[in-house]
Image (cartoon, rainbow, N blue to C red; front, side, top):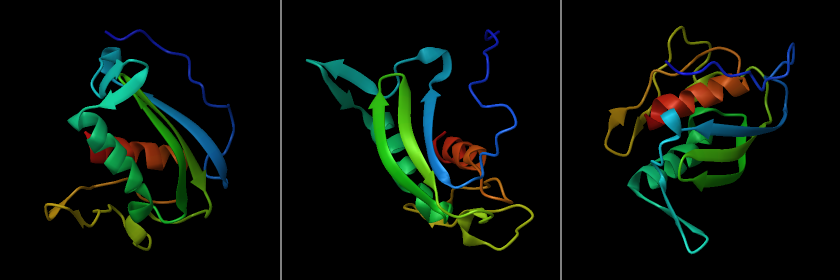
Length: 132
């Protein structure tokens, strides 16, 4: 059983507001899945490349989201997402009940993704779905 963690989210804050958001996502059990640090440099492996590429595709699925910096570490990712638009449905579909993202690369759909008003939690959940 995983130890319970204290949420870093600000209570009663609306994370769908436009702005810059810092996001850190850790791997399960802090396993070093994304590469190694060698001579002070991060060397990403195939999994690290995949999460980098998936993160870079987020604006395709979430209109109104822009990406700023991202740093991949062996057991976590740190990134800054910018919400520019409010109330945009993921995947560019107007008010879907359950969304399916368009096909990517190999022609297979990568969804479903959360639908409704665009918020930081939608984007993080979608990223996790797409990269798992």
